[in-house]
Length: 390
Image (tube, rainbow, N blue to C red; front, side, top):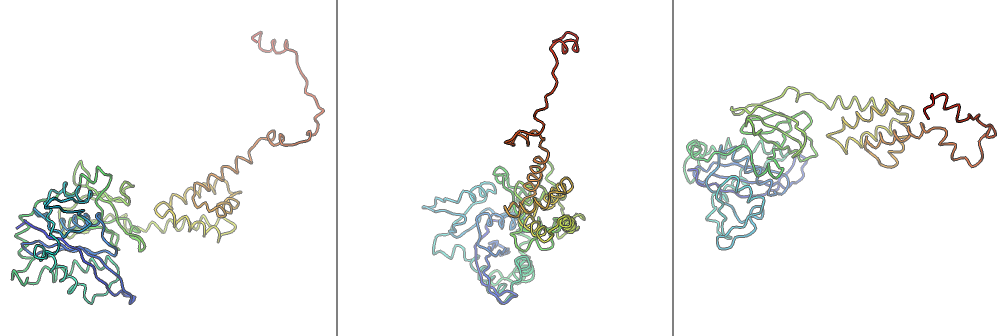
């Protein structure tokens, strides 16, 4: 118990709700003693970072790790093996050093040493994936978790003649505890990632934690970076970028199956942004051009569109007479950035404020009344005014 975990990858082709075909990829885990299984799917080939993320999710799912993990000679984790001398990819080697588990690579054409996981991969393909229709990856992973609970880990195993879920209750006590933060990732300015679900939540330690409404997008990868604060180990910090601004913080719950939600995350902030956008458009004569310009800014800076719009609003308030000229200039030059819009406004305002003397210097002919001479005073007059101090 707690000795070995086997890991392998697989792929399938699934029919979608639109009657098309899509290729899906999954990673599968199985505890050698209890046959307790875990899997995770994605709609693109796995990278080493994906593999590490899924290992972390699996450790959270199991509540710990085994002493060793068995792999095929996969390019995601291993470069080569020479007479027992392992050469792992640098990123995966750092991960192994941190988690301190033993790596066992199977020899090529040696299915017996990892027969358990190969059977699990076939089982997933032939049972879970067979005849199921794909809607989206979040729904697919949720159904996979339900299948594991209902079938994959509940039905009596043909070899052990026991239910994996029941044997796992005993094996779980023999697993090695896993800390919640990878220190090697912190030193490399990286963090553990989590997928954002359609309900704008992430999973961490058997619970769901909310992120602001609108974090999930249909067209993006929907990954966020998480970390646990070092000082108290009790606060979960969530960022949209590895070193970006914090979008959510939660006190980590010791319970399971709970939804930890910040009520502010349920507010649709996009409505306020849309209202600001419409207000900006109303200040321009060519409103269709203004709408197209603001749409382009929104596409280029989706996370900062509120800030972009705020800058534009200040420019409109400060320089209302020239905003239409600026809009035409920015559209023509493809300057889809509020800072460029503001800089052009400042430049035009500077030209208008130039003193008349500078403008007259461009004349080639003498200005009018050039014959008028200014009166002059003697030096003694200035000496008397300054009281002799000159």
